[in-house]
Structures are given as C-alpha cells and as structure tokens.
Image (tube, rainbow, N blue to C red; front, top):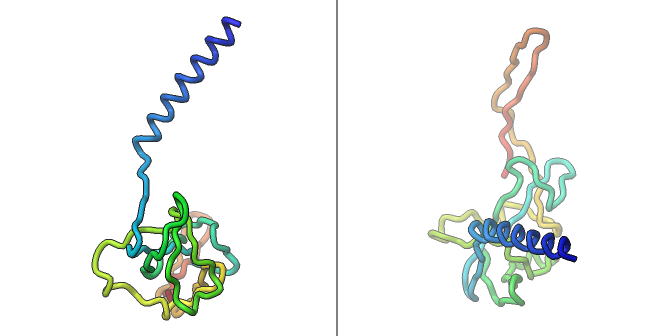
Length: 148
C-alpha cells in the first residue's frame, strides 16, 4: 500500500508539472457577438479533403460576422446564400479574429467553395521550367501559377 501511495503521489506531481507547461502556451480564444472572424478552409489538389494538413494547405477565407455564441467553444456565423449547404456553427479553432481593415479583404465570389469547405486549385500558367543535374540523374521542376 505504501508503494501505491508513493506512485500516485509521483504521478500527480508529474501531471501537475506537465499541466503548468501547457497552460503557459495555451491561449483561450473568445469572441463576442458582432465580431468579424476568418473561416479556415483547405485547398484541394486532386482529391485532398478538408481536414488533411499538407504543406501550406490551411488557409482562412473572407471575414464573417458572428451572430451567436453557442456553448463555450462554438459560434454561429452569418454565411452568404452561396454557402447555404454549409452548417453555420463552427468550433473556435476554425476561426481567426479579423485584425485590420475589412475593405482590403478578397471577396468570396472569386473562390468557389463546395459544401465540404474546400476549394479546388486550378493551374493557370507554367511560369518556369528548370532541370537540375545531380551526379547520376536529372530532376525536372516546373513553376506553376495557381488560380487562387
């Protein structure tokens, strides 16, 4: 019984230490009604789905107005009619507060978003071609201009 008490005590000390480390880095996100926030979406190259993280794939789009706070960590947004298939309630990690001038933000009409909150990247033009020579092989690379 003594060994069990010692083990429990040491586990509690270790958990408390780890919690203090994570609490320093954690910042609680809270928004108020009538705040403007960006919504996180991910681009699709081929069949990449929303939620998968690739290099540079996470992006925020257009500011939306918060209509209502639902619970501790969910917010209801005022979405435009073209996004009527998307459920308007989002978790706080999907939102980013708008800081700055709202007039400099790109409108959502130029980006076509599907019901999974993702959009398809379409190549517009090939800007540059290059062949790098290694000792035994050659590697071709292409610089592409994407639509969005």
